[in-house]
Image 1 (cartoon, rainbow, N blue to C red):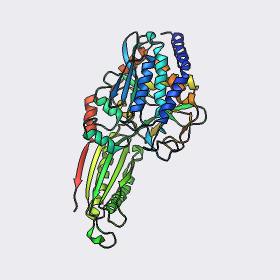
Image 2 (tube, rainbow, N blue to C red):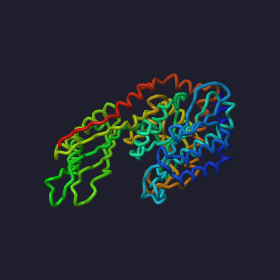
Image 3 (cartoon, one colour):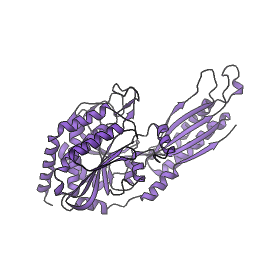
Image 4 (cartoon, rainbow, N blue to C red):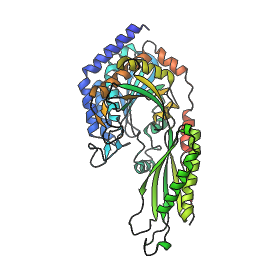
Length: 443
């Protein structure tokens, strides 16, 4: 199709976004003020639903509890492109604007993602007759891998099966009708706005219980079995394993003690630990999983404590689709300037967009700018509304137009050139293989 015609479509869509600029910004700020944890984003989901009603975008709600899926249909049949934004906040009670009761705060930048997909909705709605296929604007729950006890409770009640929002949406079929997808993450940066691509680690979660025997810590320590000492030995064994991890596998093992005893004069009879194990590949993650289980077991054996290890599936490695990345980069540089998009290699962090990237062409670029401080940090704060909300909306809109204009030739070419590493069935089977429990008793 004629490039001049396509650029005209983009300009018309951008004008529509600019026309609704204040509404988009107000939505983003409203979400910032009411942060909610994963699978609990009911207020945020209703704000998305209200925006869809306002734009006259048909939608489904209540998907994986809080997901909201808007749909725009072009003039002729074609592929379906999903533009994704995340509903949930993270927990950082030290942030000055964190919720006083829950500690939740959008220092992850997710609130800006939601504003951007609504902005894209305004732009794309105005030029729908010029597009083929469909656009799904998908507000999804629970990307941050936190609040595990709550999510385990939901699972035990049969409300979810997996702890990640996109995982659960795949399970229930909410991505079955989507051919390719992308999401734009916000990041901090005070200079010229730039964008980066990175691949990401996979991870799994462990919840570990060391069970000993409580006793008087001073008067009768010989009658107790110190569960905290068991964990201390386990941690030493984990640290001993670190030198066996290959540098190229980008392994990370980190955790927190969620219960370390109840009274200082009582030998700790129970200690609870949550851990994340990360690696660049699934093969490397399997090796890490084995070694950490051995280390945890060694902690129990060292003092005669029992050890229970519950393992839960986390997220898969993120693979950026090169063709879709090229399309997005072309449009990002048109907005940000030539040379403002960089490939930054690999990051040891994780995202459940990695799961989607194993099933369909997918990208997850980071737009750096518009925020002070550090992503996830106590100083993370919005300072430029256009960079946070409007620029991402325009880049997403322009990318969709390139993909679906004419007879959706570019989207079709990307889809036909893609061979998914996993089918939906093999993906769900893989997640299930990372859901298991083990018990070791040394008492």
